[in-house]
Length: 274
Ligand SMILES: C[S@@+](CC[C@H](N)C(=O)[O-])C[C@H]1O[C@@H](n2cnc3c(N)ncnc32)[C@H](O)[C@@H]1O
Image (tube, rainbow, N blue to C red; front, side, top):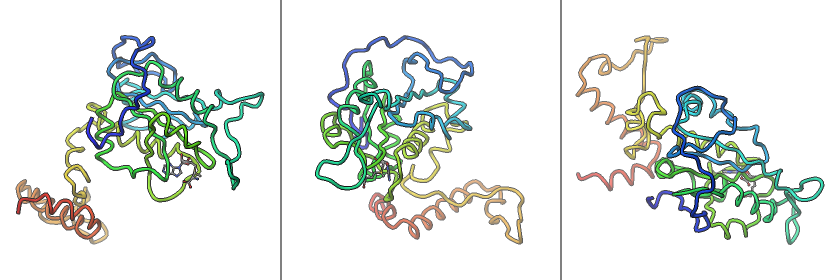
């Protein structure tokens, strides 16, 4: 696992408990029907108070088709099931006072241990959090090389800090803004990771050319009609000259990156031999 990959916690159980040696099937199946673990198939386990939010958008299009085909797996763990008392409480008031509620460590601990039982290999636990490391393509490439990932979706004011410390959980952010819960961030992370798994995209070459893979943003894209509202497609793209097309695209990638993302451009130009 590279430095870009959230690391596997020391607490991950070493032994498998009931992992079945079942090979992927290409028969379509219900997306959220519990299925036995498929050996060697990347899996996302989501701890959430809103399991019905999944698969959400992940059930659509290429990620949905790949999920049906068993190219990746998704399991939700309902945090409420681990709640305490008659009302299955999962939260309590913040120690020291203040607004809102905090997810309890005992409830989270039980849910995490249940979720991680039987997990093998490289399997980080990530808490989606605005305090976390911002998501980027390198992180997703690292996660796609793992055996799977467990995602903890917060709600309210977040989770008791001791849980993060105890399980060596890493915090990952969707961006510098605050959402009401971690579910949308979890779906973004899964989408960006799953599309890097071989076979999920129809055309794997597209992940090699798209934004960030080479450290640059992507060049502009066009399609028919050749002219739209008085705007023609640039001549070079219609020339049929592959060398010139590639050169134009590279120049545009560089220009767009320089203009829009000086931070990326800085890293890229330091890597360039010239
Ligand atoms: C209202 S937020 C809690 C914010 C927290 N009190 C703070 O100020 O950092 C509730 C939950 O939404 C999720 N969340 C909110 N913004 C997020 C972001 N930018 N990236 C990832 N998860 C986020 C986290 O799981 C968080 O526990």
